[in-house]
Length: 116
Image 1 (cartoon, rainbow, N blue to C red):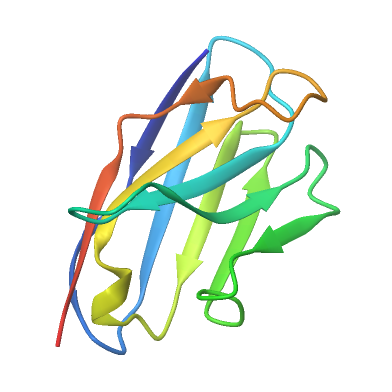
Image 2 (image 1 turned 60 degrees about the vertical axis):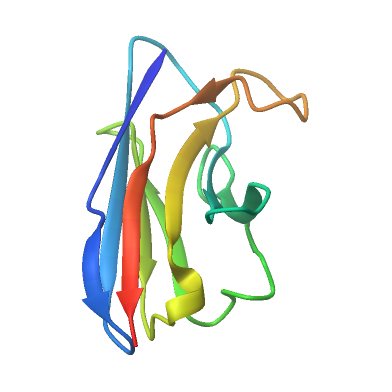
């Protein structure tokens, strides 16, 4: 399975961006987004279950970001609103192939830069 993310860019604080990540070549279960800022560890952002009935968010993005998925397109989305400079990072999508807790597949990342 390959994950291809898109939608990153440069935006001013308070603005919005929508990230997309399409899965190719096989079935996945949970999908999620992580991010890594320069000099920092990769951190969890959001996750969504296979059918989309369950979602979870990092406290830092809750109420500003929304994760969703379209299983007909094998695609997960991350709608990011009220962006802050501290949201600047490379965003990675990830997916699981079963019900385990391991994230088996990772995309290459898309850069999000929020200017103040």
